[in-house]
Length: 343
Image (tube, rainbow, N blue to C red; front, side):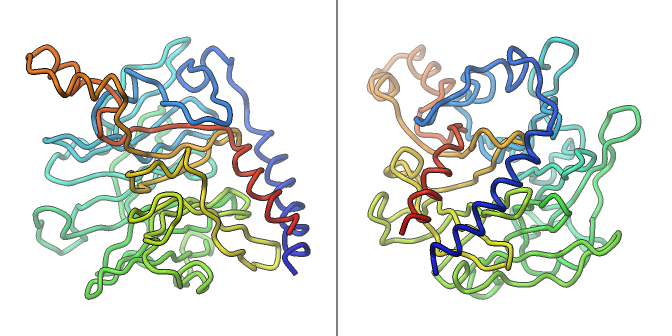
C-alpha cells in the first residue's frame, strides 16, 4: 500500500518540480540576497542582513524572487519586515508598508501564487470589535500589490475562515486553496484546516484528516504549491530526535487526497532544545527555510564575559539563543520521500 502511495506521490512531485522550474530565475548574484546556496547541512540565512540576533521567523519569497517578507520580534515590535530588489541591489530590510500600525502585532506572511497578495496574521480587531491588548485577536488579513508596485491597506480576505477563535499561519496552493491553523478557544488545541477557493470567495474550511490532526497539537503548516506535501510543527513529546519539544514533520499527499503518516526531519533541522516555529519552501522549490534556536560556541563565550562590548556583540549576533532563519537544500525532502517509498 505504501509503495503505491509513494508511486502516486512521485508523479505529483515531478509535476510540482516542473511547475516550479517555470519560475523566473534571477541572476545568481542577486537571488536570495546574494547568499551562497546551502547543501544538505542547514546554514544561517543572510547573516547580518536577516539573521541579526533578533527573533526572526516566517519567511516568504515572491514568485519572481524579488521581494522577501519575514517576521521579527523585539522588545518593542512583533511585526513583518520587508526587503526588495531595486535594480542591482537589495533594499535595507524595513517594517513592511502595511504593518506600520504599532498598536497591533503582525506575523506569518505568505505570498499568493501570483505574487499579487500577501496574507498574514494580525491582532487588529475584526470589524465592529474594540481593540484589545496582546494576542486577544488572531485573524488572517491580506494586502494587495498596487499598480505602482506599492502595497495597499490591509483587509479581511474572507469571513469563511476568520471566526471568533484564533486562526493564523496562512499557506496557499497554486490553485488558491488556503491552509491555516485554528486554535480552540477553550482547550487551546490547534489543528490544520483548508479552505478551497470558489471564485472570489472561499468554501467553508474543512479539517484535515486524523492522520495529520490526530497526534496532538499541530500548527503553522506550510503546504507545497502543488499540494503534494505539508510541513508542520508537531508537539510530539516522544520524538526521539528532540524529545520534549515541538518538531518539524512532513506529510505527503497523493493525487487521491490521501495523506501519509508524518515523518520527522533529522537532528540538523529538529535541533536539540529548539521548538519548531515555522517552515516554508522557496518559490523555485530548491530550498527549505525554517526557524530554529541555537547558541554558537562564540556566543557562549561572549555570554560569560562581563563587558559592555561583549554584551552588545552578543545581543546583535545570530545564534545567541534567539530564533534565527536557516535554509537547506530540499534534497532533504527527497531523501525522506525516497526512504518511505522503498518500504
